[in-house]
Length: 158
Image (cartoon, rainbow, N blue to C red):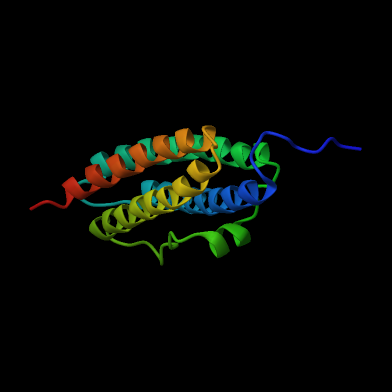
C-alpha cells in the first residue's frame, strides 16, 4: 500500500494547482506544435529570420513541457497526455491551414500571451498553498513567453 503524500500542501490545494498546471501544459503543448508547424511552412522575404526564430521558440517550448508535467506528478496527479485532452484544456488555438508569415507572427503573439496568462492565473493558487517550486516554474515560463511575445511583436512594427 502506498504511503499518503505529506508535503504540507493540502490535497485540495495540490488538486487546484495540478489542474492549473494541466492547463499550462496544454497551452504549452499546443503552442509548441503550432510554432513548429509555422517553422516548417513559413515563406516570404522574412523566411530565414522567421524560420530560425520559430525554431528557437519551439525548441525552448518543447524543453518546458517535461518540467511542467513532472511538477503535476510531484503534486500527486496525472499529467494530461493526449492531444484530445490538450485541445480541450488549452486556450491557445490551433492554426487553420497555413497562414501567411504576418498572420503566423500575430497568431504566435496571441499564443505566447495566452500561455503567459495561464501561467499567471496559477500563481495565486501556488502562493496560497505555500508551494515554492510551482511559482519558480511559473515565473520562468512568464519571463520566456512575455519575451517571446515582445520579440514577435517587434517584427510587426512599421
